[in-house]
Image (cartoon, rainbow, N blue to C red):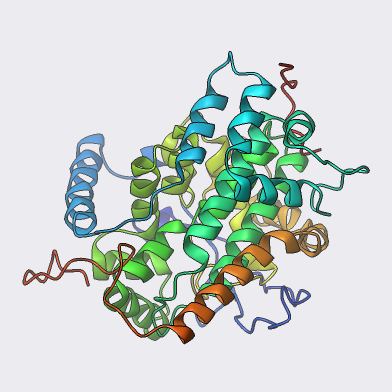
Length: 396
């Protein structure tokens, strides 16, 4: 993209927000890092022809297929979660139907009740039964809460980090992005805050897949990102030919997640490419910037992605980009306050991680299980080592 097509804003220095965990994360997200200014990119129709974009997209799909076909043992969502998603998507489903399904999984039942009674939701009286949780929280919140918990548990306990990838800080950022998205949803009048929360937690799941299944290549990405002061997506393109957003979108499709979540994961750095119907990707795009500004966890290095003005216009923000970002960043104190109430979610990550450490310490090393590295290959390219609740969401 020619430099003349870029709109540059004054750099914004990250706040020194309160530490997210007792570990007091040291990563500094500096929008000025070394040479970086915030760069705004125009919408997709300003860049190239439709034919060229189609060709580029086809090439990327081929690269994505080449990489993902070598993944063996990809974790699947629990059956109860896939059934829950389908059940809630059925307009004839009742609250009793949903509660009965959740009750078949004792662990999920306990988690949902614990989270529903946490400070994060702040209900004045105890929610003692799943039936009440479904009615009080609403279908969408229960669905997205179950999905979020399942993903946190599925990946939080794995211990295949690369040397440069901090899984704990990754989850700090992801949970913060979920909290920020839920907060911005209320500020910008997005209709389903619970959906925004789940999308925030899942938006960077592609980075986790890369770190777990392609540790050597992802380590090269991170070294390149640091050595040449690149935005992580650019480093991923150079090493892998695809980005974590592409990988995450592929995973969401494999998991049969709702189309809205799949598109959000895939386009959270460029919501304008979707045209209409980009509300949720735009919300996560802005939430990501807010979390980086507040210096919570690791959002993928010091260099920020490009801010897509379409994300601002989606919510009727037509101010000059610098002023618009100041408006979004003005919610920083509220985000820090909400993060203090999100311990129930961070504890899931912490508990699963400690459980894995204890298991590793008491067992002899074994060959990789079904959640392991990609299959060995001699091909360097492929071997990238009833009452029904109202329409409300419950998150008010």
